[in-house]
Length: 202
Image 1: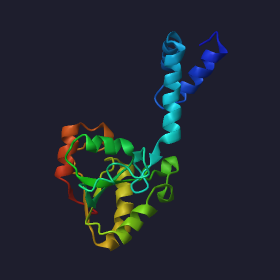
Image 2: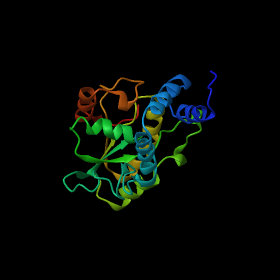
Image 3: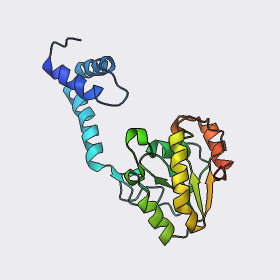
């Protein structure tokens, strides 16, 4: 694809570097931006700069937040003795949309995947163990994707958490095996959470 402007070409390169956006889609978006007035494009650019400069990671769970502690962890009405372990922030958004869960979360920031070079040391596990050591946690819910990598991570965490003598549960298999959590519909995800089962090693 020959682009007659180096500026448009650079903009296309930047947009196509985002996950899930190919060169053709990037070009279509760039050309749409080109049609807008300068103020609109400036506002567009400022939104991303502000996001990068101001969005924080919650110092308690790892969720995204505008403040040091996210609105979920700082909410005294939530059940702070129940922790739902998720892979990333998309899973929190998916679970929150079901309006069935009132505990707090812990974001691992990924799952164990040897094929991608991701091991336990790459995940946000130490802060979870520290929380179990220092706080009165009653239940840990495994809400990772129903994939081989998700199950491997569950098994690793199970061995780490077992000595703390807390209740360990996982989502019921209403979430299809092999699917990623944040793609599940709200009804299925909500039922899987409410009907969670004790986590066992087969």
